[in-house]
Image (cartoon, rainbow, N blue to C red; front, side, top):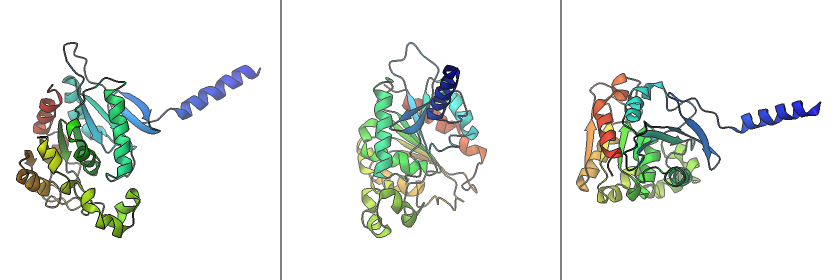
Length: 259
């Protein structure tokens, strides 16, 4: 009489242990270093020499969302998977970057994906992806951003980010250039990693001037290549043009599928 009850308990325990995440398209939810990760697989191409992927951030409980569906469907059709890991509000900190490396090792090791994904940062996901990419330029095919945060001081601000870095605000301020993406672009430029961003000129939460525009200015000065689209009058919003941007999709498809 106890066996059915035991089986029920084990089933419930297993369900509780399973990572939970709602994705905008069918995919797999799994765990890496005790953090929830996901993969939305691309259409299988038997002739492909590698398995390309886009690395999306931030992966939070409600992200990616349905607004990304349009572009994700195009990636899938091109054989490109979409992947991410929930590192919480890490703001590009070393702890968050370490978890990113764990996901990278999982993808290229056990799962056999390309050693050079395209990094994709939406809003504060820019801090996460660019921070990791700056320290791993040989592992990045390209970067794309949708109003990406590129400057910690701009967003979320040094005082709010300090905790994620295990520092006081004064300590983070003193070491800011060691962590801030806008100050760590040289290695990406040297590796000839192309960048792309779409960022509205009316964005008050993540100002264009201190984020994407500053990155383009500095990256160009370093000899790097960056394309920046600036929709007039658009802020930090859910405007469909940010998420249904064909040049962004074409950029990803071009660089993710290169050998």
